[in-house]
Figure 1 (cartoon, one colour):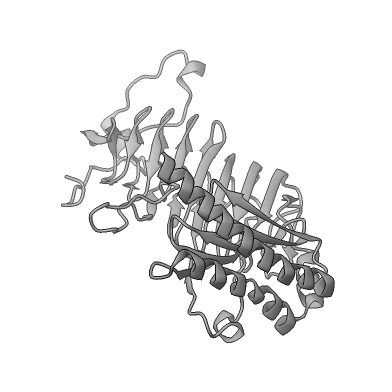
Figure 2 (cartoon, rainbow, N blue to C red):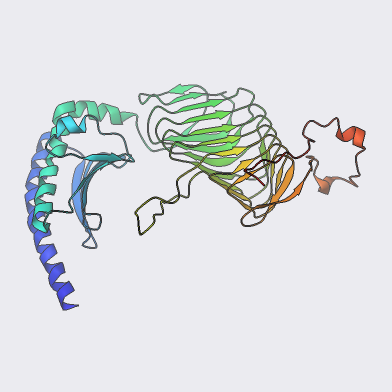
Length: 372
């Protein structure tokens, strides 16, 4: 405990000295370029953050992380930093998920803080290269607030919406640029919230009765087929350049989630390799997703199938089958289902074989090596 306290005091002493050096740089930046304000903070003796606030939602960060042994440089909204290698060529930053980092594993504590103090100058170089007026103009119409979808739309970040003007309680939050939402003029979409990062695309087809919270990560794609419905809002996330495709005439019950990602990365401690990469989800036509069922990356459901209540689906299943369980398994083949709510019926009887043969989604189950 005593050694830990001595080490902590030494780190804090180095931090204090580094912060004093950085503050002089920061004060000169504030005097010249006048961001709204800047601040630094220490997080559990593990990190130093220096934050430059150019607008309410426009924050530039330089972070020294003692756990990762890295210096990070990034915008809080993950907007790309243009021409970083040209602006600060003396440091070879590596780009990952909208942030830029530099490894410090071979440096002493003092060297780390000195390098961080020098890295703060990146802010000055960035602003000097592009001009504060340009940054200020870029931020003017760029916020993290939700905007209502009331028809066609385009902004300075090349976010585009093609939609009818009569949508009810539909909103979008653009956290990046180059996104596109296309909503069919006969969609009847209601009570949906979209959240999009960079280079995403959402396609909503006609006659939808679908509600949900739909979140897209970088370069991801989502499609909801015509006639698809949900009883209550569906929580959807599509991340890491994956796609979610929901076919026509699908039916979602209550408390459903669809996620191509696991929200957070998991790694093998022996190799450092990522274990849970995001994967596409493909839901065929006329699929019924039961109460509380969850679909994760890798799920692929054939046409005409039923997913049982509270099931967790992560792999491929064929057409016209019942899937249920945790993890989900194929329970029964050669089935089809109908939309009428049994609560509203006196009695639902059987069909003649001749009637079954006329039904579009009544097909024999065809299995393959992926779903046996």
